[in-house]
Length: 235
Image (tube, rainbow, N blue to C red):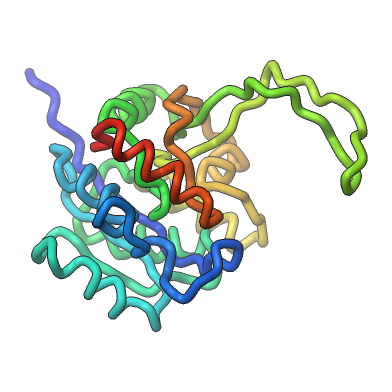
């Protein structure tokens, strides 16, 4: 008997204020090569089989700006925009609760300002969920890593077992929702979604991906993203 395709929910988190980026335009709707940064992620996930709904979190007072930015691309009945929470985990919980009526088996959680993730990376991410409680894209460290006090070098940190964690991250829907809610109730402040699943005993797999999957944090990052998007098709 052929296995059923899992129902996939997508949460794109864009609720941060972007204080390090500066400017008045929210980062996810800053244009790169003629499109808002968030457009590239939306395009990728909307083309995936199995996606039943996409929820985007955004600062409540800036939602009209996002809606206007997405108008040229037409209406998508599977897409919903909601106000984010006071923190990233709170925004993730709100997004998952908004996805709940669509009964997803799996949820993909992604940063709104990582436009260069590829379909191949997402396929590998989903495949890694087999026999695991979660998976995240990332890259092994290649540079020498120093600890430092201010601008003074301390000591070299062994990098053999260190990886940089990216998004998207993927989980069985109930697993990540329960972990995030438990963490919120206990005051645990994880730095990404996978940290909540690991905190409560889950098995999370690291999936090597392209280092091109950068997060736009500073204005200079736009030049890198523009070069990457212009050099090959991210979606």
